[in-house]
Image (cartoon, rainbow, N blue to C red; front, top):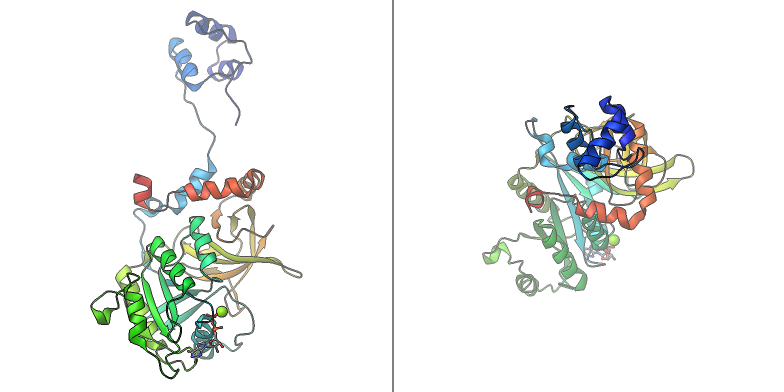
Length: 373
Ligand code: GDP
Ligand code: MG
């Protein structure tokens, strides 16, 4: 940012520098031609000399980016329903991966061939009239890290609790994370196919963690499931739909996209591959994006089945190529008009380093309450 000097002010006002220096001297301010002036002083001089002066500030791109995330940005826009984004959390070995595979294989079988051959960061399942997006974060630590970066992509947490094991330390951590995020929790009481399960004992454990089951008069839905046999998964999906309907999730699909990077890595052949989830707007091939301290133009886009696609709307997870480097997991992405803008911010962020960038994103207002605070 260039400071205003006596010289630049003189050029801007079309008055000799000596006049400015003289005016300031009368007010007891001694300056030379190359000295910097505050905005206040410059305006005083202009008034004294009868010149109308308008000071334009350099655009603060970070402020503009933060604004793109705010609800105010979409004021007056036509909002449309969007798929609910669900994260499955739970203690290790309680059956998350098995459940995800079951949910996916049902949807893969219904859709294209391919099967579950590769790691996916997120995928979508159609159930009833709804499409549900599942984010497969590797555990509650990643969930917490994303939150720390101000990237709250989850609308509902499914908490998997193995019925033979009950509430365990990581279960409790997941509960705290979900509560801190203000996200409703649906409990999947899992491995119900096992013999000799005492489900009442688990309900008791949940009740003492402020998750009073609905069958006991509370408002936590507890669904008995088996990832192994698939029992209860339909009911789980029904419950997700009912819960998300209450949330009335909607957003503006007709705008420059913003969202979050779920994962990214460098591929030998294709360069940087980034799993993004669109939160607002529609992401298109050819778009200029900024993501953390990475930037670029989207060269190609794929869905979770590796089908090449041209555009992705709200709550859609996609794999994209075209970023210049691997973006930070959990960082927001933004579609910008000019590649120069994206490069400028990316470079600034790259220089200030990771910790400063984290601090900046953590400070970003996320909700109206935050802005009013
Ligand atoms: P994760 O660590 O939460 O992802 O758990 P996994 O899905 O890897 O499952 C851990 C173990 O529990 C594996 O040996 C699974 O076969 C088994 N398992 C998972 N779900 C069920 C279930 O519903 N019933 C039974 N009996 N075993 C299950
Ligand atoms: Mg697993």
